[in-house]
Image 1 (tube, rainbow, N blue to C red):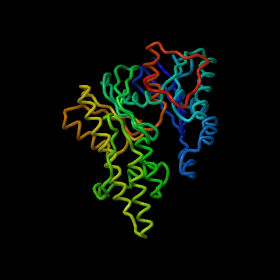
Image 2 (cartoon, rainbow, N blue to C red; image 1 turned 45 degrees about the vertical axis):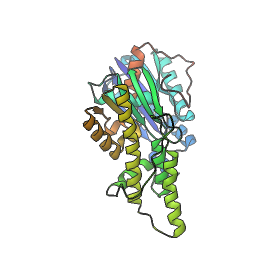
Image 3 (tube, rainbow, N blue to C red; image 1 turned 180 degrees about the vertical axis):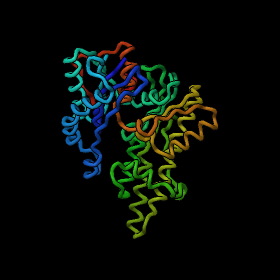
Image 4 (cartoon, rainbow, N blue to C red; image 1 turned 30 degrees about the horizontal axis):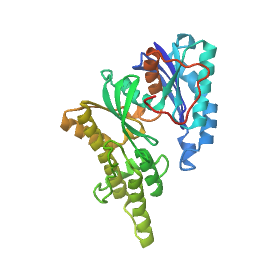
Length: 335
């Protein structure tokens, strides 16, 4: 079964053809990073316009690279939520028109479910149930994946996401967009114990996260040094922040795994590319005898292959969308 998938939730216009939810036949991404770097972050209106300009060509290229035509496609899957509403609308309306004109079923996919499914493309043996940490610029969730289309949230951030904490700290230190990637590179060689940073906890909710106070602590270090006319060693500060975030995430993942009895651990989302998080989580899983599944770096960021993988499982479970499908900026992964 071949799924043509469309992703346009933020600043990547992407299309892919996925076979049986596990095999990538093509995966095309048109990035807008260089343009948004001029503004220090994603400008939603610009992102929407660029999606509209790129989506037809990206889809044609995905079909061409896969060596198929629309006649060979069994269904069209599209990211419908969550994300930037204008950006999502471009993908959703394009997919609706394409599916209708080609007489193909339409499948709506939750973006975070797609990130989790990126691991199916890299790890053929992986199947639910498992525990997943979904961590990105806009989301930090601990999710129990009970089946391919059944999810239960065990914990989530109460304020900033881990990626947002990285991005804002990086911007305050003068690093270019995307800040989380720049901070990860800048931290190499820095002392991760040079700065003592807080480990915020949410009273009564052991698996929830809070990164706002941690972000503020880093900003205060920078502001206080500036007021005193001192220089901050940004490599050490970056390394300390990176270590602390990874330590917080790893601690909660291991605790949740022990409570739920899950021995298969998965990470997904843009921040799953963070080198310190990968190191710490791998070391912790090795110590506990857990199996850790991580997506390759090429599938950590937004892409359409992950949407096609999840779209396949949504499709075979009976999920269908019609022409009334609308995009939504927010939606629960449990949906």
